Length: 298
Image (cartoon, rainbow, N blue to C red):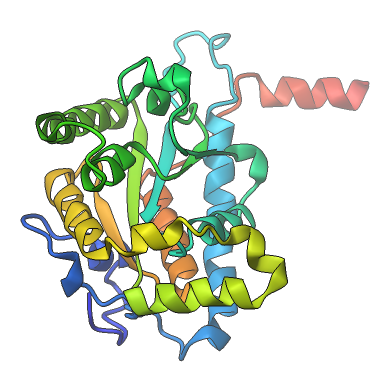
């Protein structure tokens, strides 16, 4: 993952950026890498994005269409249940979760996308188990769901800030694996992206917010308290990527020091995920010839 030079054309970006199984030390990942990007940098990103968008647009419409066709009127119909995709975005402040969402939304039909940002839990959410609010936000069939933060907040911030007993945090890894397996078995492809930035790049992005009045609203003085515990958060991320990285809900480590690469990489992984679903257009649930005749006579 540290090699920024193009690999073999037949190699998928998903396989290159897939987080390895086993103990994970996030400090070993190159946050400035540009793996499999065949251009020379930002100036070539627009062309690469256009190529990905063409495929995303077509496949998203197929996904959406299969969830909006009722074939129950066709005797003996055996239409395969429509699936969905869940894109989970996790990363330190300024890693670019919002930027990714804007980029992805700009490449697909917004009516086929749902977005949920998970902030501090409300009183109602705290009255339930930590996965309750996550379950309620899962994408419906035919949809691409995007989570800005997720169930992993409960083994990241709560671990670092000691907001729950250690034994409870430990138990959550297993509960998350069970939950994600259930989600995957229901027909949802789970794509989890760790937006990996360096501490130095985060510092530059925080300063950029203070240098631009139009970005003051993005700056939160409390971000520095989190930044001061950078090493602890990297350990927490390493544990999350180690303990919850099953094939049915894989983690991808997205180099995010370059915004243009981060955006392209996630769009490409989303495209590859949709391609792997073998999506086809739903068959007509009526006689096409008969309907043509009716339209002609109308």
